Amino acid sequence: DEGVRGTGLEPVTLDAIPGYWELEEDENDSSMHTLVHLLPDGDVEFGRTDGPLPASVQARWRVTDEATWAFELSVKRHFSEEVNVKFPYDVERVYRGYIEDDKGLRTVSGAIVIPEPGRDDINPGFFMLTNVPEFPEDTE
Image 1 (cartoon, rainbow, N blue to C red):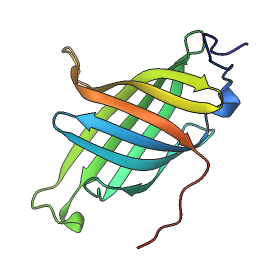
Image 2 (cartoon, helix red, strand yellow; image 1 turned 90 degrees about the vertical axis):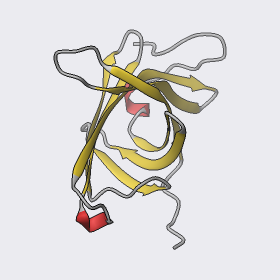
Image 3 (tube, rainbow, N blue to C red; image 1 turned 90 degrees about the horizontal axis):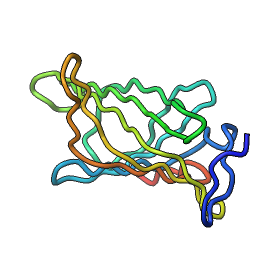
Image 4 (tube, helix red, strand yellow; image 1 turned 180 degrees about the horizontal axis):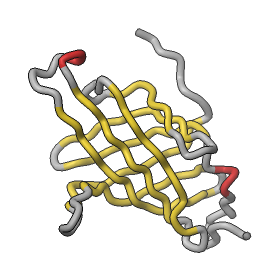
């Protein structure tokens, strides 16, 4: 498997995807950044965020098509009284995009999707994942 190729793009292999990433979400009129750790088994650990703090997060990632390096990250954030909201609620998003490697800088970019079973999905914005060497130390 030769991975992604194109002008200025280096091959990408599945081994290169697990690691630390910064998730930038641009949805409607807001933007937020969250540190995520993509684990080799498809699990995801969440770090610092400049967005609303969820009480819990469930997430999985996968490559949906190795021929085109299509990528999907599914995230369900749960907000509750534990994080200063009056009524508990969940926010589900699917991030669908393509993996690229430009001279060692790995990114994934694409659309944010709100899954709507039985209906067309809603696309409220866009995202970018940028590979970072490690989670920066918390400085709080």
